Amino acid sequence: MAIYRLTEQLAFPSPELAEPAGLLAVGGDLSPHRLLLAYSLGIFPWFNEGEPPLWWCPDPRCVLLPAELKVSRSLSKLLRRNSFHVTSNRSFAQVIDNCAALREANGGTWITDEMRAAYCRLHEFGYAHSVEAWLDGALVGGLYGVSLGRCFFGESMFFRVANASKVAFVTLVRHLREQGFTLVDCQLPSAHLASFGARSLPRSEFLQRLVDGGVTPGRPVAGLFTVNL
Image (tube, rainbow, N blue to C red; front, side):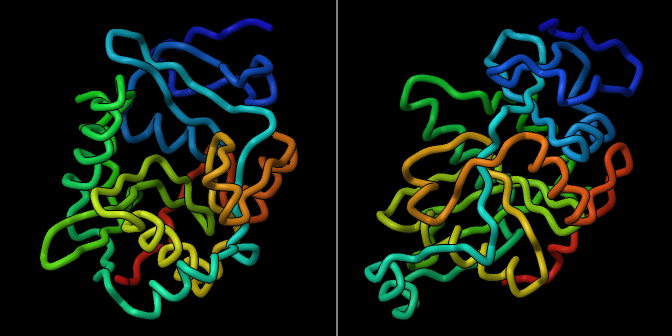
């Protein structure tokens, strides 16, 4: 299958045209309008420093349906102890910086300065959100992602104290479930995500679930994730 080269025109090819690994297009920019258009179509950027933007829509797609969240007995006990103070949108820039630093220390990161600036802009516009886990006043874990309709598109998470990111993630998913969200996009499968109940869906089903979750392809609207944790 062909990899499409984007132009200045604000448009993407159909995500169903992506190659088997999920790569759909190359080029374009990371402007808020292009990013929001991409997410509304089930497409996300993922590329390394020095590369042009690469746009992906894998098949299958890893998702977590909030109603299917699984929490281990040990994690449930930890959550009941309230060892961590969990907040939302308090330190977005710090969360994304920590996500980048953790992956840089492990051999490289796709969260380049360009990506950081782009998602900070989305945060300023009310589309990108962070969840933070604090211990004794220090930021020790968290995650960030994009919210459209009743769908949350997870991007990255980090921890500096054991279980901090797990607590942030479970708190987020429980909150989304209470708010009527129908889907958390996890992008690519992992054993870690599977332990929370994440599973893979055919791309066509994933795209339909976005529509069912209030995401209109090509017409993104602000997410409903507005209540502070």
